[in-house]
Length: 111
Image (cartoon, rainbow, N blue to C red; front, side):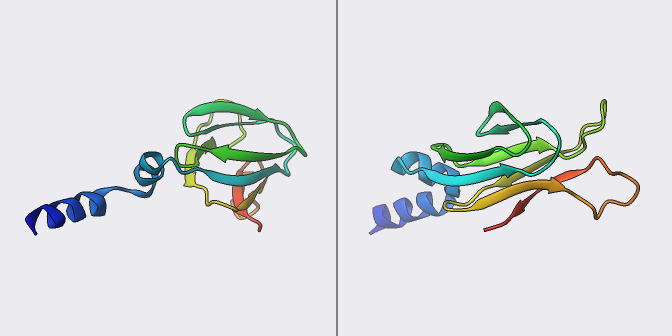
């Protein structure tokens, strides 16, 4: 019985990304760039350039984590990081909630 408990404890400690990697799982999601900017971001650590008005469908085998700079001003870096959900549809849009900075963008769940 102690072996069963030890194995149970091991799997409780695994996070979602680890569990997907171990099980061979993957996630499919869509990202749209609805800004006027070329956006540079990483998905699971690999850098990509996403041009305005492009839509990409992703298959991520390592968790589906995106990291991007939300501030399009030159010389200003403010990274955001999200774990994207399987089947999700996301869009980069201008973030109009940030007063005084028209260069902010954010990634929104749009579907």
